[in-house]
Image (spheres, rainbow, N blue to C red):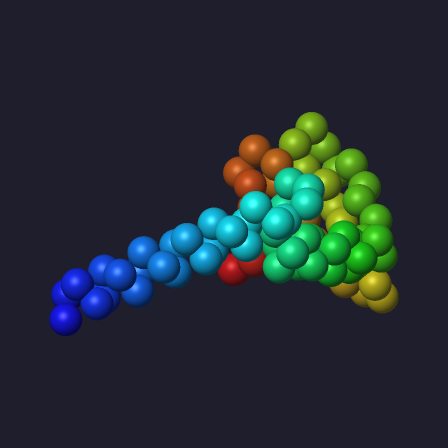
Length: 78
């Protein structure tokens, strides 16, 4: 039983390596798609410099958030 599991895992790893070799570019397709969606969503956001390390970001109608670059925090996150 353990030998069967080991063999199946080994075959899965080989299959994934072969799929990875076919990928063109730096990112795999799933991550590229997620990144493209985030880029598209960010196009409607306008950052304004609030002070040295903070930005106010307006996204859409009435949606404003404060982003602190030092603390790596945003008012949109709780």
